[in-house]
Image 1: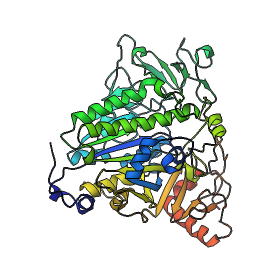
Image 2: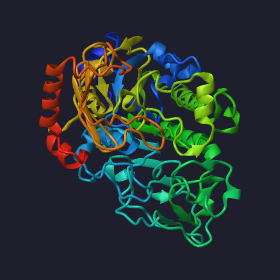
Image 3: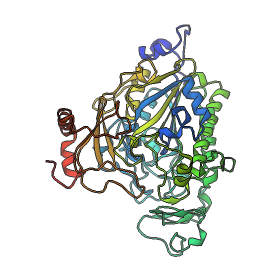
Image 4: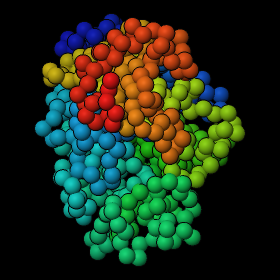
Length: 513
């Protein structure tokens, strides 16, 4: 089914189109989300140690957003917010999920892909998921219901959680790909199955050693989180994962070239374990993490080239971003941290913190928007949140956006028409902690507990409130709460009005006052 009447498109989209065109089909949307990619990992954001030439070309010919944010500094809550338009902290289960977790998004919820379906779009989701499947205690040997298909995607081909968690299989439309019924899959996150090799029982089988957390079942020489038995014919090959997902992406595009589509492409790079294809081993000069970043750049180039070869690039809005900030050492002894330090590579581009953190590097993410012939080359300083994609795309495309969402509509920001003024206030979440961005300020309330985790990243947990001026001090070197007590008090009040009950109940053990 085609939708070709330009007159039916809303003014925000009409303004982005060439006035010489008399008719324009609804644009396809390709949403590409990297996993743990920091601003400092891309040369278009100033990195001099990793080269990402294709993403650089998209940025130079499109919109480079310098003030884009995820809601959260970890994957599951960040993606929950992106698809539902709701703050993840409104759902107490929106935390980092194990690989056998039930579907996090209620099937009755409004979602971004459901809105796209209502607009007549074919919808697909390929790659990293980490939003749960089934109702809990999933039977991986039968059709998995509910799956990603039940929240608005016509087609799905996903990894259930992360590449370092079992089950290490692809799930296509709710079915494990390549499963041999005579070798059924069993998954357990509490105890191992007798005789199944783990990091503790069979260290000689490891080609990559763990530092923390990854002591479970060994697959492809890599110990994972959790325990798995069976499903040997269905287990993925880490080194060919990029090509596998690219194949599904290209197939989806080709199958829907004659109708508008919304395609979510969840890159697995550069999340641990970092295993690139053979062609990218040593390509970056920055060890395995640098290599998979270069591989991710190639993946994007291949996807965009496929659009071009199908003749639909000019009618496709490409949005590239990351789910949260970066991390170097995240549980494996893979040399990534040592290689980065030796080369002077900072994946967060000088921002403080990183993945897991309330400091700015936890949620401040790269974002590039490209639409050939429609979005002019520009650099934007307007604040935009991934959660705002729901309302913004709805406004652009004329979709129905339900009331009560936390998603806010900034169509002019997303289309590069407004480069300075965007979202003013944003609540950010990091490992169950909340903080707030308001204007140029970042306010982090007092928290008890440790200020670092096993990665060595600062979490932002201080036993006192802190206030930061992100315009004057983007690297958060100087807490100004003492020098600007009035501003600190005002932002504390605003924070408590929005999240005070949750803060008192869940966010700290010591009294607020």
